[in-house]
Length: 130
Image (cartoon, rainbow, N blue to C red):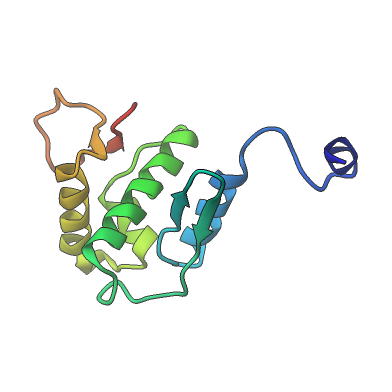
């Protein structure tokens, strides 16, 4: 059955489904998905659109981390501008993006892409595992 679905173009083997799902969530400015796993199940929960002011701190951190992972997979780095775009913030709301990045850094989910750099203005980030 799986082979037939592959031949019909209904599925793939590349494993890019999660990346495409996260990209779609970002384009629609939706909160990050929540993944839960148990002994015999995996549950993915998607949430409706929320204003950033209504999102919990944990939701913003998770969305920032997923954004950083997606950027890394696309051979890019995350920065303040990309976080503003991810959350639909304007240029004057850079402080909000900086707080989200700071919170995600303090959780240890992201790190500076260039730790030797002295500049804080143009810093970019990669996931902790990079």
